[in-house]
Image 1 (cartoon, rainbow, N blue to C red):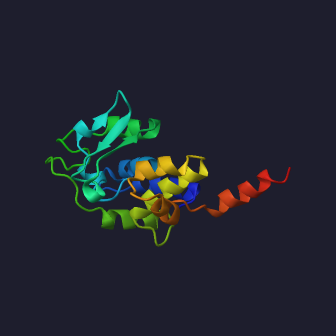
Image 2: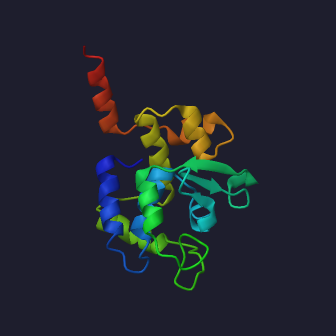
Length: 175
């Protein structure tokens, strides 16, 4: 789970990536909606986004267990989605219209530039879930957004608290 300052450092480092020009947008978006990479994030189509209701439809054919769901979009996610160029039906695609398949090398490069170690793309999803919990979002909502069949999965893998959160939490009971 990335601390907020580490998330910021990764966002900035991803913005310097030239081989995958959308890497920064991908990082910001996934820290705000927590999709599975690559299956969900790379297969979002423009028709899946409803800017009016501020939701993203994760179609069954791209979701784990083929279970479709809707994810609410906050202002950061909406800003990113509106700003991306339109090359084809996919949100994240090459100028040819073909969706990205992998970002591993570019992501590792951004992680290194950010001064981080042992961070993988799935850590963005983990950080999203944990950020939600630390910000007071109830577990049932986090479970729905992440598309988990069981709340136990959400609690076990996505509801971790970073050190800085625990230090702030102990101050709340000091009186």
